[in-house]
Image 1: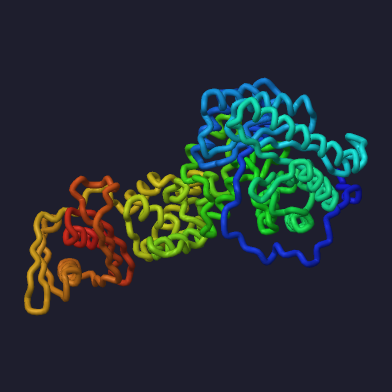
Image 2: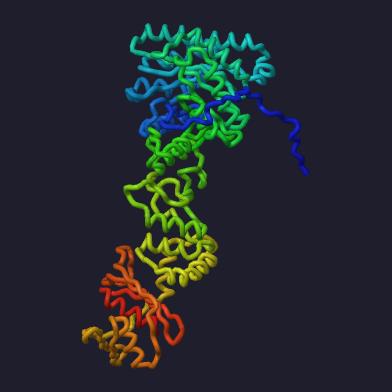
Length: 550
């Protein structure tokens, strides 16, 4: 038996911040979004995207509203270089969209990067070098001073090559971005020191800021401690007004979205991530989840996520990764309730929900229609669903408004069908079971003629039924019909409940049927149920009673 050796691990060291302010903050607007699908997401694929695949995803990202898109690492491969050139040469970058490219703090790579950017109107040049303890000591075997010198030198190369590129193409504008890679595993005070040194090279201003990107390259602590790191960094950074603080979290602990969300509370301005969280190891921060989290609290996410079936298809095609059915907000079954009590609560809330009031529906944090889902997928019926689930589906799909006593009567039928099929019942199968159980597909009782009249305060009825004449009187048509049956058979009949409604267009039983009637009878002390469809409400009512009596 394998025994977990937890003693071999130690917690990440984070700054002591007893007066932290982020827990008292609230999010009120969306951050600046940066899609890194074409770079960080792409490098995590077993089969990296071709230029054509990257173009397809590029167009989808632009359509969704991303204003900054990291397009690749042009100095790392020819495909990345060619894709960057194609965007520029074929004028595929909208005026309001900025491309971003990634490069290590090495001169020949930075030189190649600017070659790829020749003629671009605006681009973010994102340079990085590692700063974490483990990378310094075990990978590069360099001191803090040497690592900081690498950052300063990289920043200088980025600046000098940008000036040379602008001499060749005066229209080009470059924004500088620096990442202390593995910020999450770097002493926070040291990360501030390195970033301050980079800013001293670039000399940004509030009018022309640089970007400082703080990556949890490996997520190694809880979201609240990461927020402490970010707040400490921001509070101790000189010339904070001249830098946009960007966050780039990974999902090693499963908390990338939470860490990014709390980092925004800590003062960050910008979020890098991917659609659906694709990325190395357990993935990058999922922009869809964070954006929809904001949306669910009434904050405009400033991204168009309303048609997930369209953009999800593109993401799945180019990544060859299927979206999990339980993915937050856009998974196939995330608006599905199997529990009977959940279904009942949803049904009641939906019936009361008004179009002009804030959304208040139990178990549904947003209206599924906002993200291209319809109510057919909200509730499905299985053996655990109870009476409310079947009733909701029949009403939503076929307009059948079952009285509560009928819901109770039909629930065992739906449950038995689910157990027989071994899972979820389709609404069509459920509807067919309903028709068969209540004999709605069988030949109607034979009423060749009927007459209803008025005699003072009483109604009278005379009808030709199954080759016999029934006559009766009572306070209303139903009472008169029950009296007529008692006169003919001797059975004592009481109407316990009755309901009717117009037919749903989707119902396919009887081309001339326009009304539906439900009746609960007491016949000599025994409860009987009758349902009928007919061309008018009176005929439906008479047929329902007669079917119940039979």
